[in-house]
Image 1 (cartoon, rainbow, N blue to C red):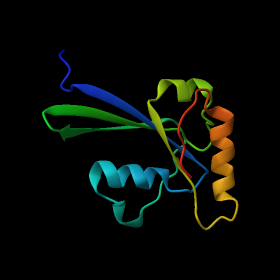
Image 2: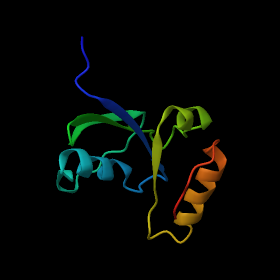
Image 3: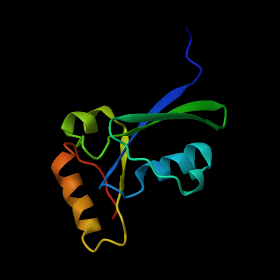
Image 4: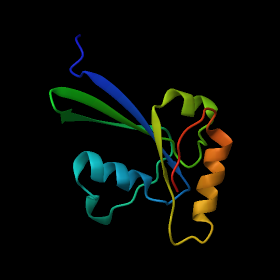
Length: 113
């Protein structure tokens, strides 16, 4: 079977429970927010889409670990980049994300908060 893309980009999506990680992925890949329907992610969920940029096809894989499966350094070494999602209505949401990044990112990565 031949591959139907030129590049593959693995994006890890991580954050606290109920932060909206699945919603963010659905909006990007399908343009759909499922009419407010919410389902918890209880395991690792992979969503794949393809982006066409110039003359290239990029396969984008979003890897989201369920709230009960905390990603570790091995998870972060497998992905190319990460989107860390937090709930802005929680007063300590940003601090939790900063701690998550300090704990799991093993190589020097540029981060913007």
